[in-house]
Image (cartoon, rainbow, N blue to C red; front, top):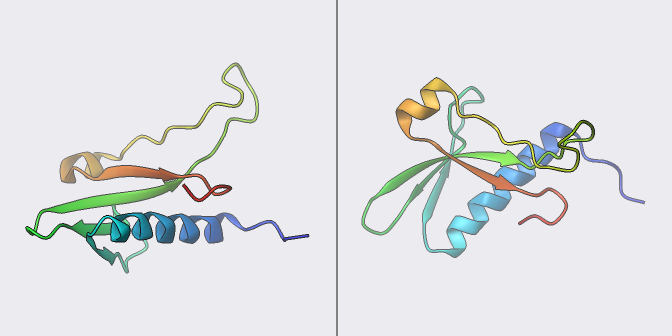
Length: 95
């Protein structure tokens, strides 16, 4: 039986999955080296247009009136200033 992945490993897997998604679409992808960066990925199209992406792994509410619903993450003030896009990936299906 596979071991449950740590939150950190799920996060890395999510970033790599989102990076692969953009690579398949023909973008160049650079990953942030700074763990405190407001973004995880920089994706660039062939015309040089850039997008900053914050990769988030989907989390589902385990209780309360919104049980079973996805928890949406709010961008930070810095992310809003920089127009960082949040992109979600499901750790179970890697989509």
